[in-house]
Length: 423
Image (spheres, rainbow, N blue to C red):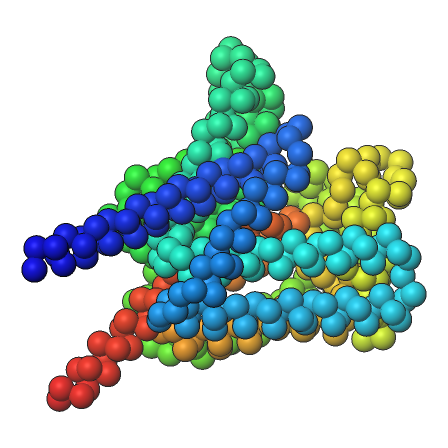
C-alpha cells in the first residue's frame, strides 16, 4: 500500500515538473519571439516558437482528453480560415498572373498566419486557460527587457524628459518613449486587458494593472478607442443582453457593412476632409489613402491585387512627401483587405470573423461568445487606422483569449445538464 501511494505521488510529481518546465520554456519562447518587435533586432526571432510547436505537436499525438477536443474544434475552425485565405489568394494570383515575388511573399505571410494558429491551439491544448497567463508572462519579460534596452540606449535623463513630454503631450512619443511604441505587442496587450477584465479584475489585479501599464506605455490612440468601446459594451451585454448570439450576429453584420461604408467614405475624400477640418495630424494617412486610391475600385468586378501586394508596392513606390519604403504599409486594415482580396473577398474575410466565427463560437457558451465579440470589436476598431489585421502577436493573442473561456463554457454546460438530470 505504501509503495503504491509513493509511486502514484512520484508520478504526479514528475508530471507536474514536466508541465512546469514546458510552461517555463513557452514563456521564454514567447519573450524571445517578441523581441523581434524591438527596433534593430531581427524578425527571425519569431522562429523561437518552432521548438514549442514541435514539442506540442509530438504531445498532441500522445495525449487525449476533453481539452484536446476543444483544441481540435478550434484547429478545424482556424484551418478553415487559412483555407479561405489560400483559395482567395490563389485565385487572385492566377487571374492577375502575379509576379513571382508577390506570390512568394503572399505564401510566406500565409505560413506565418498558419504558425500563429499552431501556437495558439497547442498552447491551449497543453496549458488550458493558463495559456493566456503564460503568454502574458512572456510579454511581461519582453516589455521589461525592452525598457532596460531603451534605458541603456537613451540614458536616464532622456528617458525622464521623454516620459514628461509623453504625459504632458497626451501621448507624444519621442526618444525613449518612441522606442517603446511596439505596435504589434501593444495591440496584443490590449487583448490581455480585455481578458483580465472578463476573467475578473479582483481575481487578477496585478496582471490587469500590468496589462494596462504596458498598453499605455505604447499608447496607440486607435487601440485606446477600441478598448473604450469594447469594455463598456462588455459591461452592458453582460448585464442586459439575453440573446448574445443574435446580438452578436446583428453587430457583426453592421460591422461588415460599416467597414465597407468606411472604405467608400475614405475613397471619396471624407477622411482627408475631416482631419483637415479638425486640424488632426493624421501622420500622413490622408496622403497614403489618396495615393492608394489609384490601385482599387469599388466595383464588384474588382477581384483584388493579391495578398501582400501593398507591402511590395510600398517598397517600390515613390511619393513627394512620404517615405513609402519606410512607412511600409497604409495603416488601414479595411482598405488593405479590400485592395488585396477584392470586393467579394472583403465581404468573405470580414464575414468570416464577424458573422460566421461568432455563430460558431456560440457552442462554447455565453462567456466564450462574449469574449470573441469583444475581441472582434476591439480589433476591428484598430483596423480603421492601423495594420493589425495580419499582425503576428495580435492575431495569436486575439485567437487564444476566447479559447480560454471555451473550457469554462463546457463546464457550465455540464453543470446545467447534471442539474436537469437531477431534477
